[in-house]
Image 1 (cartoon, rainbow, N blue to C red):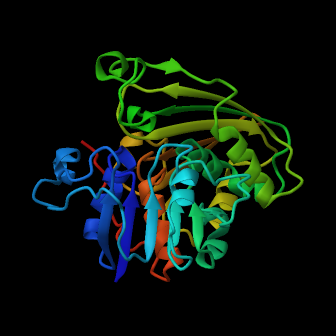
Image 2 (cartoon, rainbow, N blue to C red):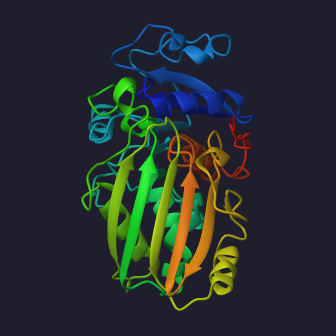
Length: 322
């Protein structure tokens, strides 16, 4: 049995992680740490867990564990590890962006997108979980990049649910403003762009494509839909065969038979990809749940790989369609 600790237990990603670990057959939760809520019941924050868990948030987050999930705000994971004497044998999965690209500290983190480098993750001790937009976009481009079929401009429009902005409400995230609304934010400058470019080059060092990325805030709570298009000499059938071959042994990525909806993936660890050819443009649509395949579900997927479990363990979830 894997004894898991969670640091930063009050956010949306931590709440999803708790739900997944409670029903995971090979895992028990040792503690859920929170600086602000130490001593309070976990259900005082994650109210849907009434009747599911009776633990309190830990004040110090100290207990014997096999694996630590870091669900802290961006920039705080490095500080957390520096302040604590965490044994070397404890595996770590970080859900922030602190270790995704150029971290050069004492611990070595590998990038945790299983569809990019599953075998590397299996041999690792510390994993940097990918960003949500990065996951959706990378999954949509990996087969093309592997075959060196991307070198020009890629146009990307993607919309995310409000949970992607975190639990604390702000002017652009609280319900009365976000509901029934849509807006562009961080065009061409989103923080996940460096992460995406870095990892596409990991797959093909000669890749030099340009990502023109326009992110949208959606008026819904969960999910990401990313629509990409680029010039391609592939026919639609050739593109579908390429993607089917690349993802053949990856259990969570599927080619959709028709233009997909976000609701098909909400509450699952799946990614649905859809391809269409329009003239010399290849369109790729990628949809995921930002809190699961884009965060906590992928973290559990990485835990399974680190610990030698079947990749899908604890992640066979039902979509929330209605």
